[in-house]
Length: 226
Image (tube, rainbow, N blue to C red; front, side, top):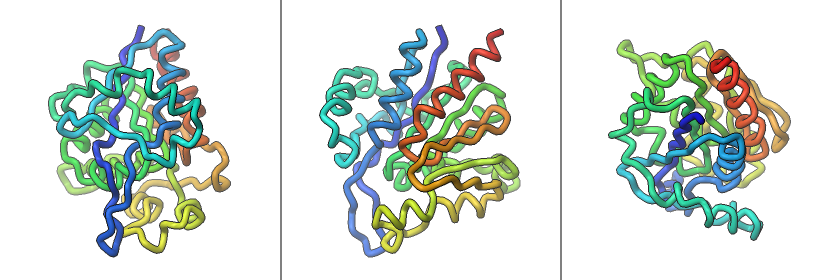
């Protein structure tokens, strides 16, 4: 049995460029589908959030009653650890689901940034999906650069944000910020499953990529155990 750390946003809204508080949270599919994959493989999941707040799912991600019902049964999401108190060395895999929430809190959270730096340097599997890569923005080396510079990465694209209807109201776009970090951003077809693996880093483009990311993380985990 391996220990998997899920780092979830604690935000319940995303501040748009006009000051509007857009209701959000984490995207249910991006947490539930990997949770299912990891636990069915016999692994244990622990959840952490900024300040240990109980995370909420974006209401738009709960339109499928089956997804909402499955999420309700996952007790770990209602019992998060305080992110600042978490040691990534205690976990075999670190995973960040998305939703617009990370654009609000994890993108500027220094505790999350430090955890990401250590997780990446450890060589153990690190997975991030959809808007989750916003958290990479808070990871800064001592020289001010990004430890993710030069990595092949994907995430929610400008095209998808535009099609979702929020690009013109967003204070910034994730794809643009990731490119500014110096990553090699790989854009797949909008809304289609697409994941990128570079060393121990696995990224997924959108909600449909969640299962792919979980599969790739399990492959890395199994390879490291063999």
